[in-house]
Image 1 (cartoon, rainbow, N blue to C red):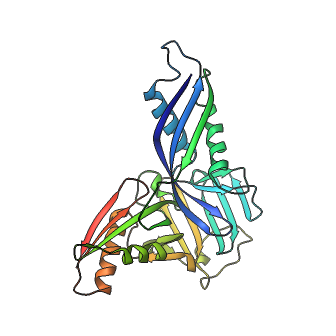
Image 2 (image 1 turned 120 degrees about the horizontal axis):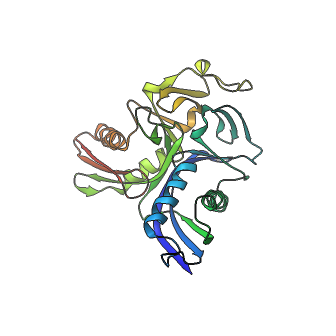
Image 3 (image 1 turned 180 degrees about the horizontal axis):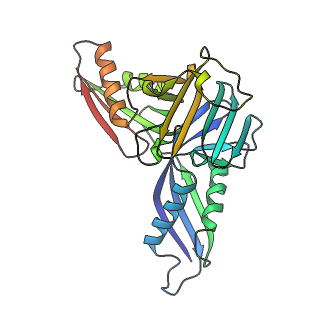
Length: 290
């Protein structure tokens, strides 16, 4: 007997890519369970499907940085609950020192649908009852007909997992100028923020102040340093400058929508802009300026 749930959850995360650097992503997850019937004549109660599977996925991968540990460009070490991570990409070196829960260590050369699917299935096998004999996940992108961008960030003031300094989203954006759809400006933000790290100026420090792995050799000429204390611990990150956009405040979706609208209003005096900015799939904020 098989049981399925479409659109079970959305996995929001960032991952390390040798070509693109740090990439923010949002994947929709469908699930199919195969197994015998339990004492309730069910493979698994739908409430438990949604609760157990979503909680497991959230616990091991959501709002984390997914690291392909079999990739030659990765170096990492862990002492207790702290992990030091170094990654060489075509965009430049990426260096982190964070609590272990900020990362998901995926035993693969690349982060893709296949490797993450296997990683999640392994975690789910340990969480589901014995009568569930097969677990099949479909990981997919939202189908979009408007421009979008991939961004990573961290929210130090957040009391949940958004405080992790390197998690992200794949987000569409829609801009209206003087009440009319403005696809030119949609494309502008999609290009500006493609594979970007949105860093708050409040978290900016010299890279010399970071306690990264001993082999890290970078300077303020090439990298921005970000550092903050949050409820989950001490978060440190050094990113290549070319992959960052500095924002003069927090990077919540509300403030990002406001930042985009105010930036456009400054570029085109006399025009009124409304920005619909998404944070991943199906949620976001609206801001207006001008």
